Length: 215
Ligand code: ADP
Ligand code: ADP
Image: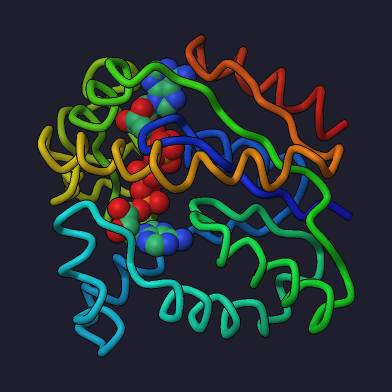
């Protein structure tokens, strides 16, 4: 049973690598960013509250995120193992996750993998990121372009550029990552389950290192 926390700055490749992991290991990916973007699109209360923070590249308050995750973890598909992508992002969220897994699901975090990528590369990756609004597949205009300009290979939907993938907002998100989320490395370091890997190479080479850890 694998319950993996994926750490790493915006644009490090967490979503890209999660797609490979899901295929090989049959885990479910829970991306807080994807859930929040769906809530914004649907115009729910959560979406309305979260949008201001997301647009500014700030973190959405812990209470909203933890409440949302508690609901998500009630669903049956989590029982076979989860990749937590983009969560936790604060120590309070990490503590809440440990508690939810231990008390509600009688399980625990088994692996923490942190992807390391230099800030200059991250800005380029996020500015060039495009994603499919239908299936969520992630592309890059230079590093992983779709076969036909601007549309998803899988379903032909027109690809979108996220509102928060503009250079200024990305720089703010990186600042927030370094000031807050990177502190989680200290939280998890003692556990013996923490692995830091270089995320700068070819995606397939990065994935080989992840497989080496997950076994
Ligand atoms: P990326 O994949 O580029 O790191 P995400 O899709 O994970 O970005 O997150 C987009 C935005 O959603 C963040 O900038 C933040 O505003 C919000 N968000 C996502 N996950 C969390 C979280 N766990 N805690 C607080 N805010 C979050
Ligand atoms: P995250 O989920 O960590 O924010 P993504 O997986 O969405 O990151 O990747 C951000 C962008 O960088 C996407 O456009 C993706 O296609 C591209 N990308 C991901 N991994 C690599 C890599 N190893 N080399 C080059 N580009 C990459």
